Amino acid sequence: MATDVTPRARARKWQSETRLGLVRRARKINRVLAETYPDAHCELNFENPFQLLVATVLSAQTTDKRVNLTTPELFAKYPTPDDLAAANPEDVEGILKPTGFFRAKTKSVMGLSAAIRDDFGGEVPRTLEEMVKLPGVGRKTANVVLGNAFDVPGITVDTHFSRLVRRFRWTTETDPVKIEYEVGELIPRKDWTILSHRLIWHGRRICHARRPACGACPLAPLCPSFGEGPTDEKTASKLVRPGPFS
Image 1 (spheres, rainbow, N blue to C red):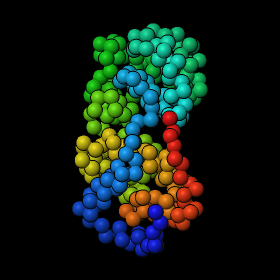
Image 2 (cartoon, one colour):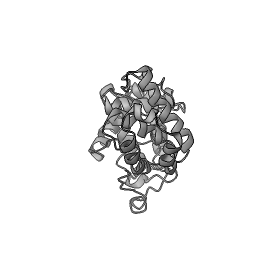
Image 3 (cartoon, rainbow, N blue to C red):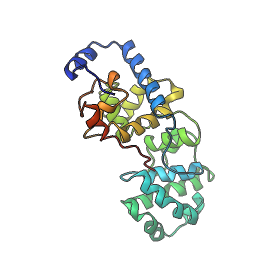
Image 4 (cartoon, one colour):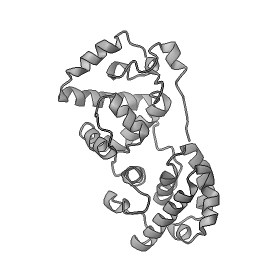
């Protein structure tokens, strides 16, 4: 979707945007994303909260696709927190090596497994306050698990999410917690989890870090950053990555 409004003119348009206007635009963006990505979902494969928790920790500094290729062997050998907590670290490292940073990740997943076993009766905790007490688990990971395994709304501020909300001028913050709170004030709580997926999908497919496909973006009329990438539809269309990424 191209637009005939120049980037400079668009920038002037949003300089005078009111708070009410920002809220309305943010919610319109969410609706357009819902139409664009009706199947948006977590691209990590999992069958239960424990598997999602481990997979999310493993996804740091690698792709969901790589994690999905690695976790079947891990979960077949260590299906429960008890099993993984009692594993031989060298064996776990061997399985996790393709994901990168495998020693640190082994320490994290074994540590959180032991904490689940010892402190939570073998069950993944269901609150953010408890989950972030687990080794290697921060707010981002906790919100992924809460939203997708327990249906507790949460905003997942990953690199895609952070980049897009700043391009949309929903926030100027760079701190993930501050971003989470500011975006949460714009979007209804019930949509927090699915909004995270929609933005991550859009960031992976169209709104890339280096050359966003602006001319092929359905959000072009709503985006103050239109023009950071090619605005010609034919050129921009070549930058679109259809996925899937899992």
